[in-house]
Amino acid sequence: MNTNENLLTRKNAAIVFFVFATAYFISTLIRAITATLSPTLSLEFQLEARDLGLLAGGYFLGFSIMQLLNGFWLDKYGPKKVILYLLCIAVVSCLVFSISTNFISLLLSRIFIGIGVSACLMAPLTGYRRWFAPNMQQRANAWMLMTGALGMLASTLPVQLLLPVIGWRYVFIILALLFVISFAIIVIFSPSWSNNEEITNTKIGFFSSYLEIWKNPYFKSLVPLGFFNYGGLMAIQTLWAGPWMTNVSGYSALQSATGLFWLNFSMLITFWLWGLINPYILKKGISADKIIVLGMPSSLVVLLITVYSGSNAGALHWTLFCVCSVFISLTHPAIGLAFSNNIAGRALSSFNLVIFFGVFVVQWGIGIIVDVIKSFGHNEILAFQGAFLIFFICCAVSYIYFLIHRSDHLQN
Image (cartoon, rainbow, N blue to C red; front, side, top):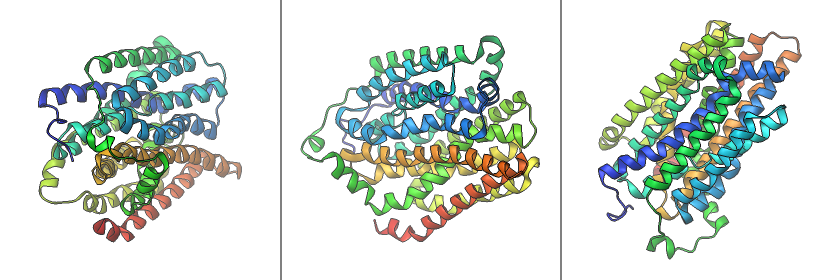
């Protein structure tokens, strides 16, 4: 439970939210930028679909590697110290990416970028668990995701318009400078973190604490949804919506970037509205589980229609899919509130590991499947349809698993 001495005033809470949202904005911009850069990088480095999927997924691989360590560090040292150390890695990695001359260099620096920004969401969510009242944590989570959507928005048409002017390499130099600015304001405005009595007196080992989390029935029931549905949403939003538009729908690079712009703009508005209405939904006694159960089928229906439509499906279809997937965002704050303060950071980071490893697998897996289907002589459109049909099946099975284990949620 939050204690009164930990809670921030409304003004200070707004400042802290803005400070951490700045870092998260940049991290999501760089997360999604491969969707916009995919035609440019594919041409310059002669990338196949599997190479593009691996390059985009490298960010999420680096991100995933750090999650368990981040959870332990966040609970022990607090959000401020952890995020500052990691942002140093992000700055250097962006600069290395900007001077890369081959695929291996691009991939390695992309992995280290993922490591450097791996606490940009978990750090504030861990802090909000202590600094914000429980009824405001759902809103803070939704508005952090709105900030992320704003970052993804900036990665689309604005980046596409910059490319002919400064080139993709200078885009990454600018991103490095933005991380430096974010570092500075976190140093100045982020609250300090002192282990309270509850945490100090609780002797929890690294592995035993994670074992407690991973054995929890509520946590286990959400793992498939986090891996395929949440991870797949991010894989599409940050990469595969773009190649679908160019390779299946026949969009130009500019049309694809414009489509991605409106997709992410729609997500920004959706998360803003979601943050506004969430506290009222919770006051009505409607649980996160019930909202997920009722809401998630809409995204599955839209996904199936998109796959079936093939070349007739474009930006509008993927926008509807992403908007209808908003219900999955309730899993993060629900996980945070399901565990006590002393292991909340580890619980959140554990679930983040599931999500981002899912993004890596889905991003790379779709690329591999596309190339495999094409190797049998099928055209690009059929290859994409086949890959996304397999993705749909995985998402549907994950949802069914959640329904079957819902009684475990209610008993937990």
